[in-house]
Length: 464
Image (cartoon, rainbow, N blue to C red; front, side):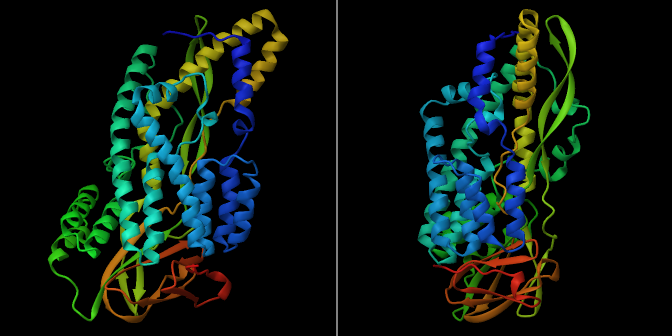
C-alpha cells in the first residue's frame, strides 16, 4: 500500500481548515428543527434554522431546508426563492463536473480530508428531488409551463449524474486496488449490512431516479398536450417501479381524455421526513508502521424517521381510495450510501493509516505533542451526518377524475384526521398534501385544511 506520511504541520492545517464544521452536529440541529415542524410550529423551526446558520455564507443545506419550511409556512414564493438559490449551487456543481470530470473526481477523492469537512454538494437524489419539489410548488399555482421547465432540468441533471457516477465508481475500484484496500461494507463487523441489502434498496436502479419524478413529468406533458413526451415519462416511471398498475394505466389512458364535465386530478401525498445520517465506529485491523493495529473507524449509517405513522389510503368525497407509493427517500438514501460505501471505506482506511504513521513519528519526536494531535484527530474523525432532513420521506399519489367544484379529502386519524377541501377548477390539476407528525399541510389556494380534531393540529399552505 502506498502510504503518505504528512508532517505535523499538514495535520494541524487540516485541523484548522476543518473549523467549526467538523464539530457541527447537523443531525442534532435538524432533529430540533423537525420537532418544531412536526408540532406545527413552523416559525420556531425557521428561527432555529436561522440561528444555526448565522454566518454570511449560507450552504446548500440551508437553502434546502429553508425552502421546505417556507413551503410549510405558506410562503410558496419564498420557498421557490430559497430553492432557486439551492438550484444555482447545484448548477455550479454541474458546470464543474461537465467542465473537467477527471479534475472534479481527483478533488473529491482526496484521502487527507474527512468527508464531513468538505463543502456539502448534496446527494444525487436530493439534487433530483429539488427540482421535483420546485415543480410541485409551481403546480400548486397551476403553472404547468413553469413546472415543465423544472422537470426538463430534472432530466438534464439525471444525465450529468449518470455519467459522473459511472466514472466515479470505476475510479473508486481502481483506488481500492492501488491502495490495497480489500474491505467491503459486508466485512464491517457490527455494521447494519441488512439495511443496505434490503430488497427495496437493491431493487432500485440507482439512487437518484425517482418513479414519482418521471410520472409527474408524464402528467405535466400530458396536461400540456405533449403526448409524445408524456409517454416516455410514464414508461420510465414504470421501468423504475415495475408491476405498478397506476403507471401502466397512465400509458393506456393517454388516448382516453376526461369527459367534458370532468377534470383529471392528481393528488400527491408526501409524508414523514427524510432519514437522518449517524456515525458508527467499527474496529478494523490496519497495517501501521509494520504493525497490525486495531483501529476504530467511523462510517455513516441511515436512521429512518419515525415521526409520522404510515398510511396507504385517503378518502375523497367519502370514498376510501388506495394510494400508490412512487418514492421512498429512505430507500434512495440507503441506495446512495450502498453505492458510496466502497469509496468511503477506501478514503477512511487510507486516511487512518496515513495519520497513524504520522502519529507514530510525532510520538517518537515529542510524546506530549503527539498526545495533543492524537486527541484532536480523534475528535475530528467521524462520519458525515449532513443530509436534507426536511425533505419528505414517502411520496404517494392517487389519480382520479372529478367534476369541477368543491370536493373533500380526508386523511387517517393517525396523521391528525384532517379534512381538506379542494376546489377543482382546471382540466388538469395537482393537489399536494404533506403529513408530518399529526400535522397536515396543503399547497395552494385551491386546497384548504380543516381539522376534524383540533384547529392547532393542522396548517394550510396559502399561495401568497
